[in-house]
Length: 89
Image (cartoon, rainbow, N blue to C red; front, top):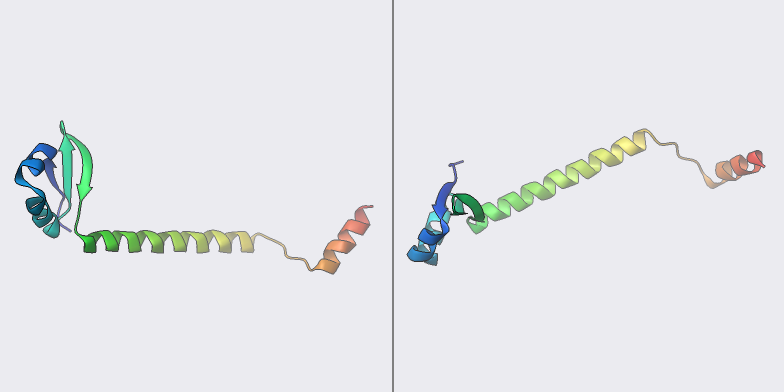
C-alpha cells in the first residue's frame, strides 16, 4: 500500500475535482487545512475494500463475543427453570 498523499485543500480546489480524482485513483489523498487533516479522498474500489474489511472484522468480533458468552453460560429448559423457582419458595 502506498503512503497517503497529503495535499492542502486550497491546492485541490485550484486544480479541480478531475485532478483530485486522478490522484486518488492511485493512492489515498489526505486533504489538509492549515496542516491538519480535514478530509480523505480515495478510489471507490479502495473504499469498498475498507468497508468490506470493517464488516468482516465486526462479524468476527460478534462471533467471538457470542462464543465467549455461550462458553460461560448455562442453558436450562423450561422445566429446570420451574423447578428452581419452586425450590426457592
